[in-house]
Length: 201
Image (cartoon, rainbow, N blue to C red; front, side):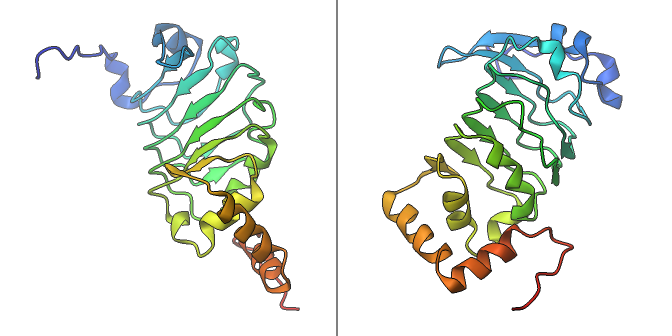
């Protein structure tokens, strides 16, 4: 191992995956990040379910659940202090429709390298009026035609999408397209649940 890089001690139970509970939260690394946010590090515990986050008692502005085994984002508990949520390198394919209803202060969401296939799953982000930074790279959904334009139009608070600043010209272009007759039809199709056929008018 390289010198100067301390190894994080992991419990033996980690081999089978850990339950996200009050005990694990208490034992996990807590710090202040470079932008002065209280940060909770829950990376690489093989956590399968997001649960019991109320046990954080809303003490953290930033929570990192990257490098786990999470397949779904459920309804999150009230965490008004939360500003940044990192969920990269999981297996997320589903996002509960009301997942973010109780974390309306969220400014940054990182979902890179998951299994999100449709823009429908990102509809839950409508509950986040302050969301400025969204990262969805390395998900199948990014190959969807009009993917970036859809995000820019649907979530007007976004300033950075997939590490690229949103330009004013992009906002105008997306708005012009999606408010046209053809664009409105495309928009309806993009936000539809994948297993629901949109009627041809």
